[in-house]
Image (cartoon, rainbow, N blue to C red; front, side, top):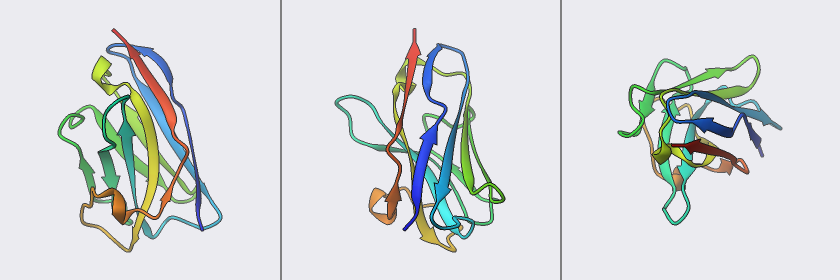
Amino acid sequence: QVQLVESGGGLVQAGGSLRLSCAASGRTVSTYYMAWFRQAPGRERSFVAGIGWTGSSTYYGDSVKGRFTISRDDAKNTVYLQMNSLNFEDTAVYYCACGPKWRTTATTAGGDFHSWGQGTQVTVSS
């Protein structure tokens, strides 16, 4: 079983940037598809970004394309989410998730992910 711990959330002004980290332990995640999801108050959880196990394929939700970048450092067993040009609608709890092994194509369905972190709060002030 893999444990995921997110960090890097906080309060930022609109237009600012944050970088989230997801540190994995208990198992290497280098051969797994990894993703970020978010959930705002009163809204359903939604897909933010995903990265294939090789690191060469990345996928983004429509609302974050061009602003967010997902990456992975397998030597550190860590996945990152660089968030730029943040706006109020980005306010949410952000979750890291571990998905299918050996996967390079996109999956955005929460049911495909077997391990989740506890989440980190991102608040964007307008």
